[in-house]
Length: 352
Ligand code: AMP
Image 1 (tube, protein in one colour):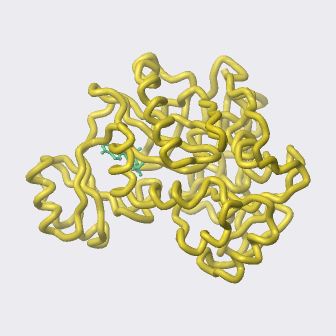
Image 2: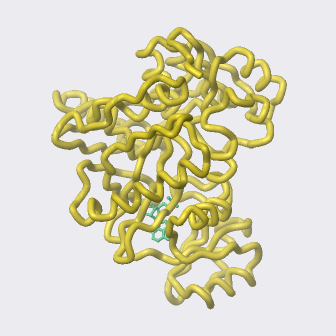
C-alpha cells in the first residue's frame, strides 16, 4: 500500500514528536491531522488540521479515521480498544502499543523474543514487593506497569531501605520490581521497518540521563557501547518483527558487563533520535513517514562525523538567546507554553 504525497497522515498525540513528524511529513508534501485532548498542543501549530478530543472518544475517532489516509501515534499511553476503529489505517498497529504500554507484558515479550532484561518480578501488593526484595536483593526499582515516562511512576529501594515508602511513593499500583543494573552506559537502537520486512537502523546514540530524563545523546557512541550494538540490533529486529511493527521503533539498552540489557521499548520515534534531523541523511521523522506511507527507505548514514544533542528541559529554554547566537547550533524550540520543571521544551544539536 503506497500512500502518495498530498495524502493526509493522522497523528494521535500532539506533543513535540507529533510536531517534528508533521514538519517532516509537510516536507514530503503530506498534510497532517493531529488528534489530542489538550487545548493547543504544540504539533497543532504546524499541522493542517487539529481535532481536540479524548483518546477514547469513539465518535471523534471514527470521524478522524474517515478524514485520514493513514494514522500513527507519537506516544504509547493511549487506550488501545478505541483505536481499533482505525483498523489497518493505523501504522504501527495496536499490538505494538498494547505491548509497550505495560512494563510487565513488555518485559515478558522481550524475553520471549530472546532479548535480555534485568531480573524482575510483577508486584501487586506490599507483600509482593517484600518477596521481590528477598528474591532479587537490593537496590531495586519499582516502576508502575502503566503510564510511567521520564522516570515518573518510579521509586528506588536502596540497600538498607524498608520497601514500604517506595510502594507508597508509586501509589500502591500494579508495578514491576527490577534489579538495579550497574551499567557502563546507556544507548538506544532505533530502527525503521516496512510492512514487507525491509528495515534500516541508525547509528546508536549513547544516552545520558539525569533524574530519569534524557539529557544528552551522542553519536558515535563509545567503543564499549559499540561492542554491544550488534547483539542489541539483533534483539531489536526480532522485537520489531514479532510485533509486525511498521514505522520507527526504539529500544533503550543498558550496556552492562553481561552485555546489552533492554530497559524499555518505545513503539515510535524517540528523543534519542532527534540528532538524526541534522546528523543523518534521513531523519527518524522522515523515515517514519516513508515507512508508514510505503515509500522507499532513505539512507541512514551519518551526515557528519558525529552529533551531540542536548535537551532543553524546563527553564533551559530561556537560554535560547545564547544558543541562537551560536551559528553552529541547530536550535529547536517546541513552542510549548509554560517551562515547567522536567518539561521537554526544545533541544539543540551540534554536528562534529
Ligand atoms: P525508564 O523510565 O525506565 O527509562 O528509566 C529512566 C532512567 O532511570 C533510565 O534511563 C536509567 O538511567 C534509570 N534506570 C531505570 N531502570 C534502571 C535499573 N534497573 N537500573 C539502573 N538504572 C535504571
